Image (cartoon, rainbow, N blue to C red; front, side, top):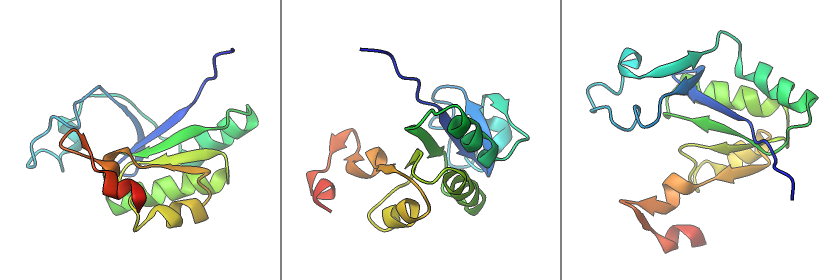
Length: 130
């Protein structure tokens, strides 16, 4: 079978970024609000919708919009990416049973619930039933 490219739009503090490996996870709570403490490969000046539209133009369906933090700016930026290509992108990062429908209604084709269904490295099966 052919290899399929799945693009990703990572969003942190309302910006499209590429963050190095586990540098976000490794920050202490005091550093978590300090974007300068992150190791960042790339930060775009373009809006998230630019990338969704680019992927749509190139027929790269099934990509991911990932929020690397649940702040209001990141949520707004994620919703802009989804609205730019309704049905074209998956949504992940902080998705729960409380907000999954909001992202689907905003244009996500699927939601990614990894952080919701795993706690401390273990699958929480009750959360899969929700």
